[in-house]
Image (cartoon, rainbow, N blue to C red; front, side):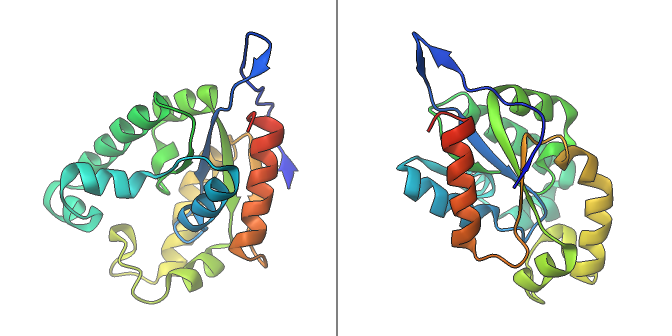
Length: 188
């Protein structure tokens, strides 16, 4: 577990108030799986931004991409994140490209503990399987596409407050580290 830039716990009236914990990383890094486990262990709400978007839009992510394009999806993603982050503290699984939006990245880093689930593209691709069902991975070799995504998004991921390497670990082991960070750095 690597320590990155400081992320102080918010204090009110002398007592720490839990902050959101936002998990970021490539598709296949385990954000949704790890987030659900960590939230359960912390007795915290869990929000998967992609699921929230699908619920609000009444369409799948793939359909939003196909009908409206990636830019429209990213607008929905930022709106969903802003809604979640203005609500009660929770564990949040953000989409792989969420941090691409510089303004959203700044707001999220300022108000939440951001944890990068670092995963090698080949391992992420193997977790996703051959039929990943992810719009940005369709029609290409997933591992190659994930390498390109990591090259483009790596700078944003590296702005996260903390990093947990997922390679060679089970989801439960990664969740243990996220829970420890949530307790130590985010007041849970």
